[in-house]
Length: 482
Image (cartoon, rainbow, N blue to C red):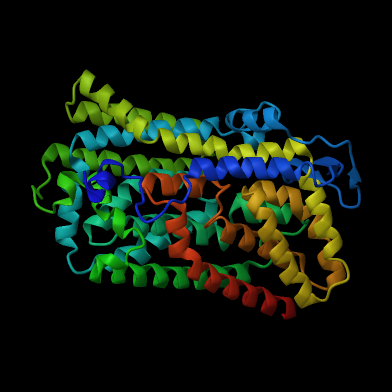
């Protein structure tokens, strides 16, 4: 069997790299954080319940060292399990997300069994021939709206299996599809305006209205979106002109086999049947209902999972799949995303180790001491870098806000900087890191669905990360003097 045939047989294999899989990376990070619990002194802040935030927040000036609880071999082995479900750590639970991913996979399996998606893609590509490039800024803008308004994150996992085939059929690659979703929603969170899980919680914890600083955040949102859309469009155009310039060129054949019917052959029927049209309407309405439920009805993974389960049954009935084919397609689809579900628990296991090892507050206390006595420019830029580092270990925007804002925001008063600028620095840093953060299940999960290895993603995105880093630093620096 040739190397190309081997790659086609195993879509996740990147023949150009021996880089470890996401599972290995995350497990090594669990071991690394466990090792830190033997080195970093254990400590805790006192915490009080905040009615505004709805959670306990740390009290500035109350840090004390406590009895250490270094994490050993047994703790490391238990961490992925506790990452799925730990009754003592709500923030670390991932079982709801993992189950949602499996139900989503089952739903997509049923839809694919009807042939509606493949035929719809061919029809769409025929209709948009020559104008496919404009799908990129349009779709990225839509995901950015979700990110800036309600912190769209885990919900994006539902869109990868839909958008990636469209991008491949248009002559681009899997990375283009991943980038539209991950960067689109990510830049929205980075430039959050009314996001309740980032801006609102952080502002409440900082004791300021969440509308303070909204103008600068809009500038970061719109400027960042323009930069990211231009970057992805330029990359996609290069790939279309010369497929060898794709960062996953060696996986192109495998990706086409996986995401497109007939090994990526653009031939075939381009006319949707009446049944397929009805199925695509149900398909679109399912996602519209999901967005409505999350944004206005406080839905979370259980209701979203139930929605996709119900939609799968309805589509199976409309498509006349029959009981055996319907259940078989659902199980096969869930099996395809099983690896993604496992990644979610592994990623949350890192948070479990930090919590049990009692080192998160010690890291925060060191940041508090480092910021004392600095001028405006030095203060806000060091604040940004501190939040960058903390975001790696605490990828949750709400978790990082509750952990850091009650301690770090009041320090702005002594530096002559508005607390709203500290909130902006926090959410910009968290959003930037979460474009590449291997401890963030949304990143690793999205890459796993797209069959893009982590090292290939870094090769693609690192120039954009540098551009955004300079842009955000400049915006924060200007904001410090206004």
